[in-house]
Length: 170
Ligand code: ZN
Image (cartoon, rainbow, N blue to C red; front, side, top):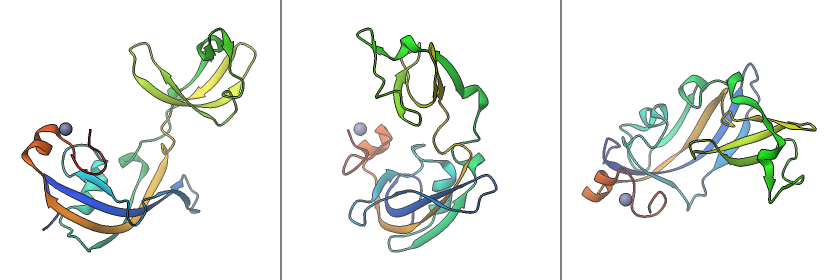
């Protein structure tokens, strides 16, 4: 069975990234060999370029491909680096200084209640400089792995737009 729209696909992979002119690869993540990524193909849950590179493959096939940053998580956006008042980080009126360490990723909520992760860039007396760019913004992605399973999606999975067994279920 080949990978195409409305198939449930399982893959194991190693992901490395490179940024800018650097050729040195940084390890981002690996699935365990018994813990594949399982997703509904063509449902918009994955990076489109990721799916495009897997389309037509079958269980047992290996893959190795790269996705440049503009087709992955985009470029770093200077507008996504903002100064927030220190008050934002107060819990019960107290700033958690352990939380506010440079490089820490902190989950916050915007005015519309959307959750977003920000990285602490710099802590000052009254403000905190936060970077809300995706950690992989500006990075080219390099995937290497295997297709471990391809199966038909159930009508329910197709109507919900996600997989109901293993990862990505309810
Ligand atoms: Zn569902």
